[in-house]
Amino acid sequence: MQDVTVAERWTQERRREHTRNLLLDAAKDVFARRGFEGASLEEIAEAAGYTRGAIYKHFGTKEELFLAVNKRFNESFLAAFVESIDPETPVEDLDLASLAKQWHEMQYSDPHDFALGLEFNLFVLRHPETQERVAKQRLDLAQMIADFIDEQSVRLGETLHMSSLTLARLSLACSDGLQLAAFLDRGQDDLYEPFLALLVTAIEDSPTKKQRKKSAK
Amino acid sequence: MQDVTVAERWTQERRREHTRNLLLDAAKDVFARRGFEGASLEEIAEAAGYTRGAIYKHFGTKEELFLAVNKRFNESFLAAFVESIDPETPVEDLDLASLAKQWHEMQYSDPHDFALGLEFNLFVLRHPETQERVAKQRLDLAQMIADFIDEQSVRLGETLHMSSLTLARLSLACSDGLQLAAFLDRGQDDLYEPFLALLVTAIEDSPTKKQRKKSAK
DNA sequence: TGACTAAGATACGAGTCTGTATCTAAATGT
DNA sequence: ACATTTAGATACAGACTCGTATCTTAGTCA
Picture 1 (tube, each protein chain N blue to C red):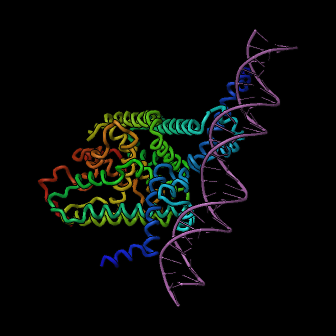
Picture 2 (picture 1 turned 90 degrees about the vertical axis):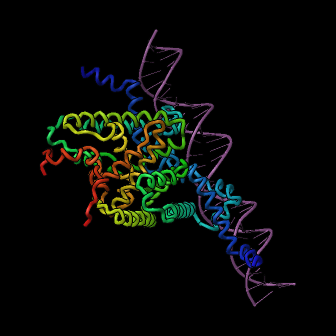
Picture 3 (picture 1 turned 180 degrees about the horizontal axis):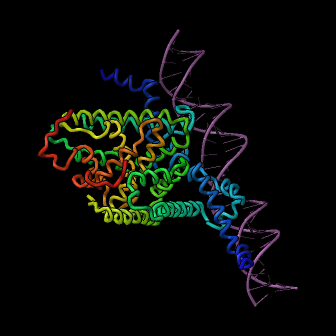
């Protein structure tokens, strides 16, 4: 068994996959630091321990490399979200505020990552032909959050004031803006908490809420 | 009279100011389309009808040119906002929703302008030494909106659930995210309306607003 | 009117970037 | 064991880039 594993590890395809991952890692770093235009394939290749030849063999063009990084970024983002809620936590402990806070801190804690996210958005804005490819990923993420919201609201017996998908997209969109403000307005009050307060009013219909004991303060 | 005007118009300083404006106009366009790194001073100069020599005479460096464009952008943004609310409209007609909608459509109606805004943000993220210069402009805008909110809430006798400055910053931040979503999620439901609904609940304490005359303290 | 100054054009230097085309060495498979 | 494919390195070409240094022309002031 072990033999098989080792053999597989050094098979041609495995090796290719391996360097591909290294290239993507390096590309993510460099793109995040320098931006799409500012990053040079030379620097990316060197950071990965290869030369530009490897990049062209794997991705063909700078744009494709960038889009591959984007795809991977979104996938890991989504995976992190799934993981953060999937381990079934006791229902009582799952209050919106702490979850959102966790989300808030989970992703984009690194300014570079956040800058990279902005860079993706800019790229799509400037390359409309890629819009469709990326829009799907955005929608997938929103839908997943929407599903989660549905699940929770049913369980808690809350009534939403808007469709769960809309609420999910709204949360994501605002989250982007709030995160940006957090980085740009260093030293000023955090906006995330007041925003959550807003969200909560949107979810919990006022009359029933006060009688409910869902969170122990 | 005319002679004086004409004389002034062609004075050295006036002329300098004039070309400076043309350069800034062209720079805004090109930066918006290509981004900071992607834009070339050559293209900017040519678009303005000059050569690179003029740019270096006026701004010295690409960064300074970009920051000058940013400053101008923010100033005109703020001026547009002031103008949109200053002509004293009848109090009755001034409802939050229509105002916000106007705001929504006023700025960033052009994808390029919005992309340029993102580019500014990215630039500041990547050039922390410029953070302070720009943060002041952001705060000025937020404060101006906060003042407006105060004015209105006093007049309407509403009670805010958070400080007006926080509400202003929150609105601005979320607005950015929502605008981005509007450009990226073409074809999906607009998020601005549900967001406004949220905001309104933050301002108007309960859904039964019409019947209640809140006693503000 | 003539010297001076400054706006802006032209010329230059040095570096960088992407993409392609060729080359090498290793792994495959028959 | 040999021929073939393929991952990745190397070399090259063409085009751009920024920034500076010099030059020209026009407005200013005595």
